[in-house]
Image (cartoon, rainbow, N blue to C red):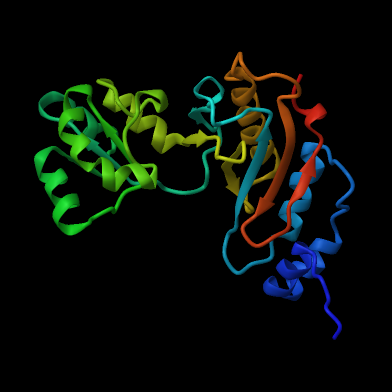
Length: 244
């Protein structure tokens, strides 16, 4: 009996169909591209019927199992992500009014906590809370935590300056966190963006990751960088072209 072994990319191409296969053939898998060339290719290969999201996957030379090598935070992309994000703010009194005036989609306290608990409602993308509200919001840990929605001081979502926090999210602030494999996945825009805007967002992201490099990280920090669109293949970028 003949047994054929398939490479994982063969299986992916079979699953994605002809468009993916044609796009995959345009990418030299052995080449490390310059950022502008790679992003230009991503735009050219994005041929879905919807505006595909462009994502950067950065593999870092860290061991996430160690607390002193965690990489987590937030950064404001200068050109936004192309997605309107709904923001919920847990606050009372003047801070609640500040959040509403800044453009928060939902503002409240016990009422919102009850709605989430009883109705399993999660109609928002980012949660912000004032520090004095965290005792109340903490009740939602099992619901918000696994979904990455729990307010956290490290990402600027636990703050008394709720107005600024809301404005930053609406302007394009995104959170990043290294996964178990040492990779940070971050959306940097839409395929419809001009190449200059994608490149601007990409550079800000890389600069931020370099800025927060853990002191305990040894050896090469930026191990690999790949950009891709929702339905397209990945294009590898030369880390030496983007970081020192």
